[in-house]
Image 1 (cartoon, one colour):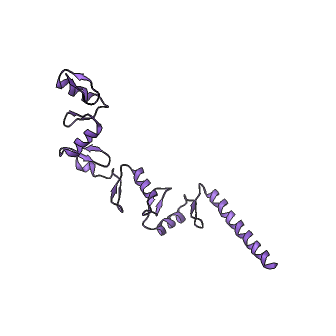
Image 2 (cartoon, one colour):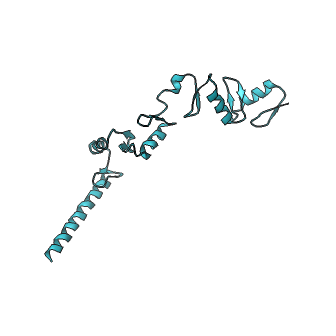
Image 3 (cartoon, rainbow, N blue to C red):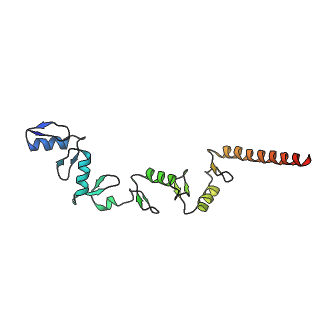
Length: 167
C-alpha cells in the first residue's frame, strides 16, 4: 500500500497515488513534473531548486517563461531596488518609508522631491491640503473651515497682544 504524504490516504498503485495527488486541489503538486509533495514548503523548494521551473521567490509562483516572471506585474521600487508582491505592498512601502517622503497617499504617486509633491498638492484640484500645518482634509469645505480657524486664532492673538500693550 502506498500513502499520500500530504493527507495519509492509501492507494494500491503508484498511478493511483499520482492521480489522487494531482486531482486534489488542496494537495501540493507539480504539474510539470507530475510529482506530489508532503507540504507546500516542499513544493516551493522543488520549484526553487529545479532548473526546469521559472520561479519567482517574491510571489512564490511558477511562470511559463522568464519574460512573465520579469515583467511589470512585479512592482519594483527603483530607489531601493526591491521587488514587491503587489502594487498595494509597493504603495505601503512608499507610505512607510522615510526615503520616499515625497509620496502622495491620495493618488499613489511618487515625486522626486518634496517640492514636487507640494507643487502637486497646490496645483491639483482634487487635493485639500493646508500648507501651514501640512495636513490633508477630506474636502475643500473642511479645508476652508480649518483655514478660517487660523484667521480667527490669529485675530484673537493680535487683539490679545494689542490689549496687553494698551495696559
